[in-house]
Amino acid sequence: SNTTAGAGGAWCQGLDIPNELFLTLGLVSLVENLLVIAAILKNRNLHSPMYYFICCLAVSDMLVSVSNLAKTLFMLLMEHGVLVIRASIVRHMDNVIDMLICSSVVSSLSFLGVIAVDRYITIFYALRYHSIMTLQRAVVTMASVWLASTVSSTVFITYYRNNAILLCLIGFFLFMLVLMLVLYIHMFALARHHVRSISSQQKQPTIYRTSSLKGAVTLTILLGVFFICWGPFFFHLILIVTCPTNPFCTCFFSYFNLFLILIICNSVVDPLIYAFRSQELRRTLR
Image 1 (cartoon, one colour):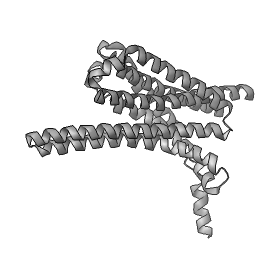
Image 2 (cartoon, rainbow, N blue to C red):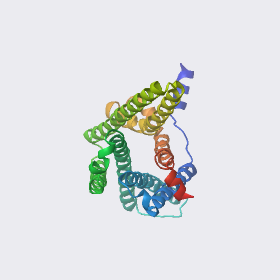
Image 3 (cartoon, rainbow, N blue to C red):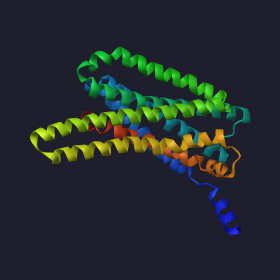
Image 4 (cartoon, helix red, strand yellow):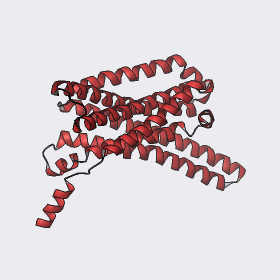
């Protein structure tokens, strides 16, 4: 039993993640997303609702990186005595940075959902896409997401001790997860049906198997990255609501910095999945 207790104690100590890792990942994410934004702004061929949504996702991911970079830098400067600030000012700065982080988290999740809906409309309503997703509607959607993100982050930071606020954030994550799951599975099912009908007419089952495999891999990557990067953080919030004093939950809380690293990693991976796969955007970057 002593061995078990010792192992449990070691597990509960969490991971010692160096601040340099936060800084490195934050800088990589910042550069990547700045490149995406610059490419979309520069190339007029990319001035369409789909790329505007990708640009907004890049801005959200960039805010995640910038806010974490700012917080890490302030902590390092204060730890080494380079920066001396009164405790009251530190609290205000901490609230502002936390509000920025929360706003970027909510907006990132929102734009991931918006991109999924946009792709769904592109596939299922291809002929009516430009009449459905007009530039005006795209602008209204983007403005609504940013406004909702700002308001919700302010409320969240103000009433963060209230379990109802945490439940709203958890519910929002689950809604986005289910939305993306349903839309992408429906899109994959349609693509599979089309490929099957084409291959049956041309009697080329190899094409069907290859395309189906490619679609399945893409779907797995999209949903897998989303769940792996965001899931632990929101599971952390669920445990705060359900078992804040339970020993297992307390041990899980000690890994909070790891969950933040995963969110920053998502900001690094998002441009690779949603932006850099576009030939037009890669050409602009070159």
